[in-house]
Image (cartoon, rainbow, N blue to C red):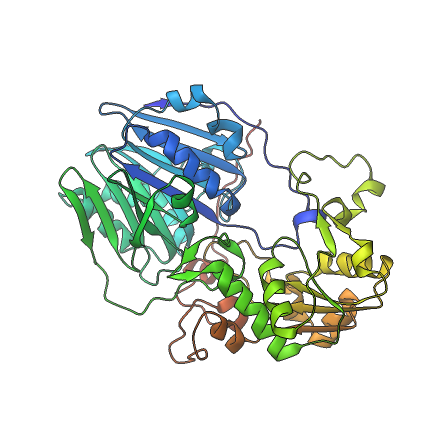
Length: 495
């Protein structure tokens, strides 16, 4: 196996600019049987870049050797280079883009992970978060395992390696039975492409086809970019395997109703993706329309907070009969390379990324539409910016319910005490951000937007704990942390 250890510069993350957003999770991609497997995987990862901007990696197999390239930075920083793709020959490849929800931004945490097992090489990429990953890690280390990363994904390698089952798929399934939380996995051996989705289907995973070759990936937009055909979603609790004998589907878990993550529709998935058979763009427009019906404000123009609030603002404007205008212009070239030299420049904060379109907002009553509100710090600056640009009234509308609980399934949310809605009433939040009025979409409203009548409290149709506090799986690691059990040893690596 060939492995590169060259590093790219890490992504620039400034809490003053980016700390008020929910951070993306990860994206996975895999293809079997194509002569340009690595190049196609790189293109697929480009389409999934929004799911993770810290690092990217690809592992391929050429019939005799595995090849790996894993780098910090964006996909284009590494995988747009011809010589890099040429170092990844083979007809099977899996890839991963990463935003760290467990483990730091260091090269040894970049996926796909690879290990040499008794049965041969095995590579795996993971979107999601194991809520018992640290508990499993402690047990494995106690049994003599040597961990090289601080990612929960590494425990999957060890669990597969320790299985005494004969067939590889049985080893893989035996490992999955020990996992709690969320996972969409794309894996490969020298003969197989493997995909798996947790029993509740919390994170998305789809099956596609290009030139007769199967593809598994996080979102349909990755199929579109390479001209592949969407086949179907990988089902909740399904293990899909493709090898020289064809496709095989296994259902190793008891059948339960799926509970996909509602935030895929609110924020994470690309608007041009289909998730669970629904257009993400149309769902976001529906959320805006529901918001207009529930909490309309007297206004002259509807202004989205770009880019996340755009579809909801379109839906709100159409339902409310109020003109939609681009009252905020986003600078798309700030974030990765801009270095703030002084505190006075840093205090410009949100203006580095957003600027008021004075011609649109001056002298107007405006409705600002955003997809979510986390800490509220960016909202304060945007409201202030609108007032300085001459808006006479600023009404803030959020196209999702108040976020009152942290996530443990792959979304990087602040601790509960740092979530504005967990510690403030609606009126207190309104005063904090400085708006004339503030309203959120109701929980039932967001369910109506995705095509349900309402939320079924007995059997919720989606994973929605950030709004309701109802977690769909055990939180084993969290309970252990509260009991004072030790977590990870941390090693800082020089760049």
